[in-house]
Structures are given as C-alpha cells and as structure tokens.
Amino acid sequence: MFYLMFGYISAIWGSSFILMKRAELSYPSLSLATYRLIGASLILFVFWAFGKRQNPFKKKELPSLLFMSFCTILPYAAQPYLIAKYGSAFIGMMVIFVPLLTILVSLPMLRLSPSKRQFIGVIGGLAFAWLIVKDGVDRELTIVDGLLAFSIPFFYALGNTYTKKHLTHMKPLDLSLAIMVLSALILWPVATYLEDVKVNEHFQSATIYLGVLGTLGTGIPVIFFFYLIANRGPLFAGMVTYVIPLGAIFWGVFDGEKITLLQLIAMTGLLIMVGLVQWPVKAKPVIK
Image 1: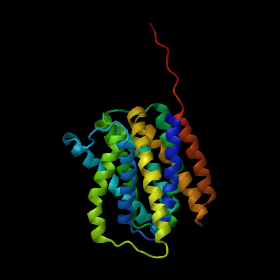
Image 2: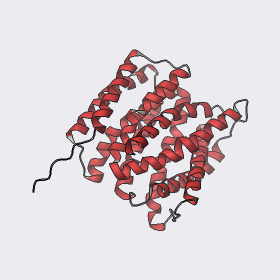
Image 3: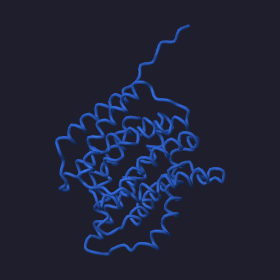
Image 4: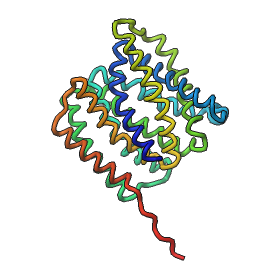
C-alpha cells in the first residue's frame, strides 16, 4: 500500500506543473493557488463528511496548523509564478532538493539521522540533481527568482518534518482538510485584492485544468502524503520529489519544452538513487 501511494503521488504531482502552466492562461499565480486550495478543500470535505467525522480545527492544534498553512501557501503561490517565466519542466525539477533539505531539517528537529544507505542515496540523488539544476544557468534566473525557487523545496521539507514531529496524532484526512481550508482562507482575500482573473478565450479550459489540479492533483495525494509521513517518515515521503521531475519533464516536452541528453542521464541516475533509498531493509534476527 505504501508503494502504491508513493506511485500515485509521484505520477499526479509530476503532472501538476503542466496543469499550472495551462491554468495560468486565465488565473494569475495567487488566484491559481487559492482556487487550487479551494478545490482540494472541497474534495477533502466530501471524504470527511462521509467518514468518521471529528473536528480537525481543535484550538490546541491551531498554531501548528497555521504554521503548516504558511509552509503550503508559499510554494503553491510561487510555483505558477516561476512556471510562467521559466517553464514547467525546469521548475518541476526544483523539488529534487526536498530529501536533502529534509535530512538537514530532521537532524535538529527530530534528532534523527538517516541510515548509511539512505544518506548515500540522497547525496547521490543530489549529485544527479545538480546536472538538472545546471540547466537553470542557461535560463538566466535572477537572484530573487533563484531564492524563490529554492524556497519551494525548503518549505516542503520544513513542513514534512514539522508534521512528523507535531501532527502525526491527527488522522491524515483531518490534517489535510484543516491545512487546505486554513490556507485557502488566508490566501483568498490577498489574491482577490491583488489580482483579477482573466475571462478570456482560455478561461473554460483553464478552469477545467485548475479543477483537476485542485481535486485529483492536490486533495487526494495530500492525504496519502501525510499518511506516508506518519507511517514511513518524512524522508521516505519526501523521496517522491526525486520522481516528480520525471513527470514534469515528460509533460514539458509534450508541451514543446526542450530536453537534453544531460537531463536524461540525470533522470536515470535519480531513479537508481530512489531505488537505493526505498529498497526494503531486511529485518535483523532477534538474538535470545
């Protein structure tokens, strides 16, 4: 079940960047992020309403949930902005830094260290990731945009680790619903004040893409993701970010973006490193 969830998350989030690119033809970045959160909230509410309902907005949990909302809002708003400037494939590649940053954040926060095999896999993945990031030099990223792009995996890693430390007692569905609703409520007035949705010839198709992004591409995989964090840890869950770029590159090429031989070599290496980290560990015999 863990690996099925891992595969679904990787596939659907790998497609999310092209969905953002298409939706942004009518929806500016903040508005896109807002309606994505609303779509996720709606589908999560449906599951919650037909399940064993519990109040996910308990007073004692609000500070942690608000912190997680902040860690969600910034990447969700930054990604469509950067995709419009640098392409969906390249920005999709930036999430490959999540596992390394997860290790760095986990050391002080969880007081945990990865196994030797996991450490080798993450560092090896980072080496292959550098081959992909090198492509950004040719795209002439500004310093501000570069820092903004780097903040995306940082906040994902921070949120993943914080969830493991403070929020694993909450059911994944309750946790997902609370974060999506709070994030939408915080971002909605800001987006409404600063941006106007463009009702143009792309509006209908952009709305469909945004609807798919919010429901199938955000709401459902977020539940699975928090479930993996709670049961397998933030590093295991964060390793989906080594597979997501494969989908981002595939859809980028489909949409006319270029792919190089260097990127193909890097993707192959990334898959090998994912296998190294994810390969099940044999249980050691108990000595009586």
